[in-house]
Image (cartoon, rainbow, N blue to C red; front, side):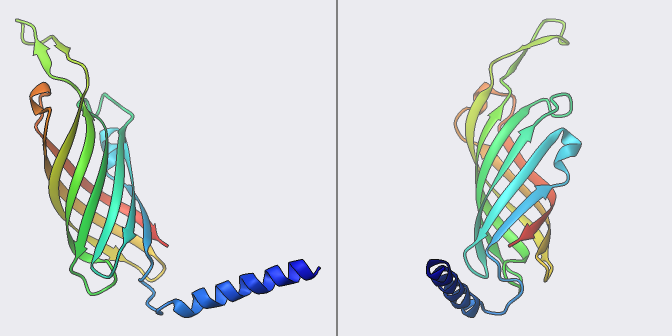
Length: 178
């Protein structure tokens, strides 16, 4: 019984110290998860996680996976870490610019037959891309997030092995800040 009581007091002490360190700003929570609402329109799913470093900057990563190759014939998946700088008055919200990297899997170059209709496709190409983007984020006091973003990048190493040399990031996402 004494051990349980002691453990309860220690846990309460840690909770009290944590509660006293909060600033009182309802927007200042450091983690965020998001789901892109536009991705299913192209037969894919995109989820993201973002960690806020301070009022104006954050680091994050998003993962984009194609599940329906009839709607998105070229991209297979990508993993994209990013850095964002926010210009809004609220904590990590408002207009932002971002720089991103992307590890991507794209379908290989298509080689067309003389009839120019049928083709064979080379194996998938893995590549890295660098790019920049911009967007806007709205945050509520309850922690709900609405975000719109657009980004553009260039494949760095294997663009000659595929029919593409650029990548695009775009989305209208909802999420939760905790």
